[in-house]
Structures are given as C-alpha cells and as structure tokens.
Amino acid sequence: MIRIQPISKDTATEKQQAILTTVQKAMGGVPNLISTMAQSPAVATAYLGFSHPRCGGSPGWPDLPGGTVCLWLYRP
Image (cartoon, rainbow, N blue to C red; front, top):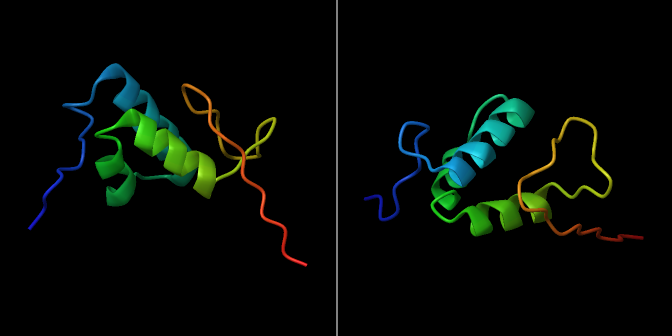
C-alpha cells in the first residue's frame, strides 16, 4: 500500500518538474524514491545533495534548483 504517491511529470509543479528533469538527464530515469520525495521539493533537493555531493559541479550531475549542501565523507 502506497501512502505517499510519487509525482508524475503530468502533475508536477514547476519546481518538481525541474527536479524530475534534472534526475532524468543525470540518471536516464527517475527512481520511485526520488519521484516520491519530489512531493516536497526541499526534501528531494536535500536528498540529492547528500547522495550526490557536488561542489563547483560534478561531471555528469547537473545543478539542482535552489542549491544543495555538499557532503564529503573522509574514510582513511
């Protein structure tokens, strides 16, 4: 049973559409997890910022609307 419905491109707002388009270009598709998180553009943007860190841009990962936080993990 799905409690939170994923966003489709047909019903997406402008901000949601920007996120879905960015993910589509970068990954070749939009995972259900991200399309569900897109119910709240702030949540989707934060998740993508943490799971795909970029400072000054990463190859293959376009900038997301609204900016994101870079997270670098150091593992010796």
